[in-house]
Amino acid sequence: MIYRISMQSRVMTATFSNSLAMRANSRFAFHILCFFAAWLLAIDLCASANVPAASEPSGTIHMVPGAQYEWKDTDIQLKKTGTQKGDSRSEILQGASAKPVALPEIARFALRRFFKLEAPGQGLDEYANNVNCDSTFRKPAGVFVTLSKNGSTRACWGTVYAQQADIVHETVFSTLGALTKDYRFRPIRKSELPDLKIQVSIIRDIIAINNFASVNPLKDGIMVRSGGRSGVILPGEATDAYYEFVLARLKAGIKPGEPCQIYKLRTDIYD
Image (tube, rainbow, N blue to C red; front, side):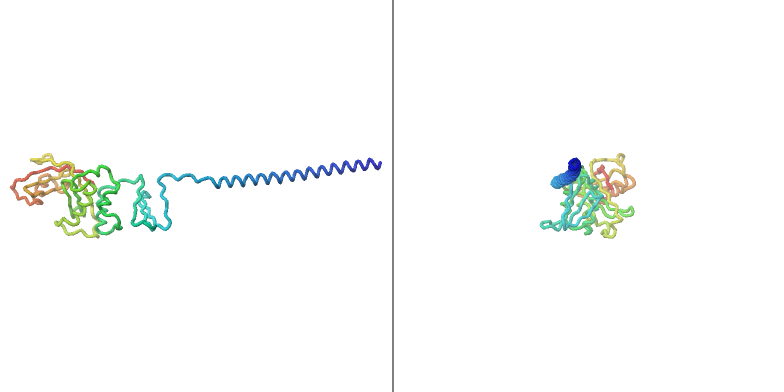
């Protein structure tokens, strides 16, 4: 009887011991799994930290620490005033989508530079070389720049035949001529700039004529010549073709009845 109880106690003890062992093994396995999961997570984090960043898109502008930035033209142009060593002047970084600058705006830039309203930097010749414009303006042609205020001419200057490398350069230097060489009018003041209307006329054809039947005063100009004297009236300066002729003779100093050559000027007008 005592033996049976002892055996039964041993069996119960062994069963209880096995149960404890299984529970201990389960806890140990659980801890092992937790450690293994943490180890995998650490490896994954280390691997992701070493992955190189995605390449930047082309055209990305890198900001330089210590420099001042000013966005213009709805973020198309970035004007950077550098403060880094070796950066001696302002730079204009133009995006590929920058719109071409119109001729009247090129003339207005020359006006503002003349009155020192534009920051010093590149000269007007360099500006004319680099400004983004329509490719058709990179060809030589005669150009006139007319500055008017409240419907009246304030100054006009230009040339029938090309004197500069292209239309852009003609526009810039004709603008300066209108400011400094047209003595028919009093000098333009800085305060007048906001009220000035700019018209750029490109001379496309010069045609000799002997009557005014084919002349449209709103689209065609008139040029007269006699000896070394000449005078030009641009489209819109007169109400009819004959009046254009009369005004052109007066500008040239040609007396009534004095013979002269008459030319029709076909022009493209930008204002």
